[in-house]
Amino acid sequence: MIEMDPELISEITSRGKRIDGRAFEAYRDVTIETNLIGAADGSARVKLGNTEIIAGVKIELGTPYPDSPADGVLTCSSEFIPLASSEFERGPPSEDSVELSRVVDRAIRESKCIDMSKLCIKPEEVIWMIYIDMDVLSDDGNLIDAACIAAVAALASAKMPKLIVEGDKHSTDNSVHEGKLPMSAIPVSITLAKVGNSIIVDPNLAEWKAIAARLTVGTKDTSDGIKLCSMQKGGDRGLKLEEVERMIDLGVEKGEEIRAKIKQAVGK
Figure 1 (tube, rainbow, N blue to C red):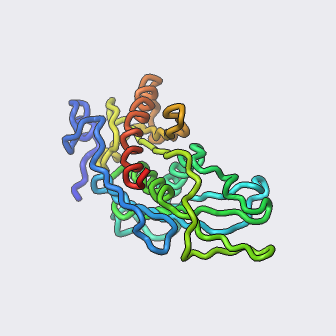
Figure 2: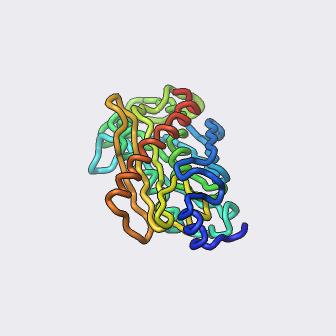
Figure 3: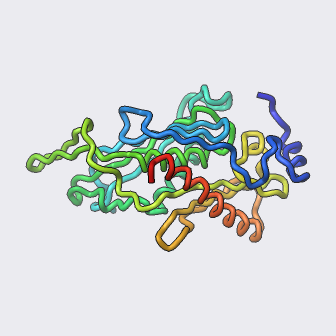
């Protein structure tokens, strides 16, 4: 892949254009496939332009944390497969991998789309634990949005393993499923990027490397309308108040577009 000078990217956006011809507020094509991994309780593969991520959900029995003895547990992790990019290396999770997991986790957790109390089987003893694993298969920019779409689509398509209770013992039959996860909303993260003095959505890889500042806006759908549930700032430079307000407005607007695609993919 030919590297492009970030200064050149900024110059192009200053003229009101993008290198791939999209409008500043346009996403690349988004495709979502679900139920691809037979060993997972839920899974989804998302292609956002040439960025591709697959997410798998595993639901297992576990012990609650001492500070939340009557709540289930949800954790997110991501892996940057070296074949996906020449910049990805083997070894412990990189800072980018850790940030990706945290931003996706925050959007899902703060949306409260899953009632964690409903994942409690026996307070202080047995709960359901939800593991979301995301693998980056191809990086062409905006991994955050692609990963969140994949994680949420995998959750929304996941099914609960059958619970078996024998006296004080609890186990599961993973060959049998009993209903879906108790999800009350579809959270979505939208990353808005400041390149030069322009605000763009869904930056591709060349644009991502030219970002001065970015804001990831998490929203959820409720019976009372769309609500903000998370925000994450990135980049070295600050943002003006009017830029933040513009980004939030775009996050809400584009979030509805992506949410509709997720709902269509999972049959909601």
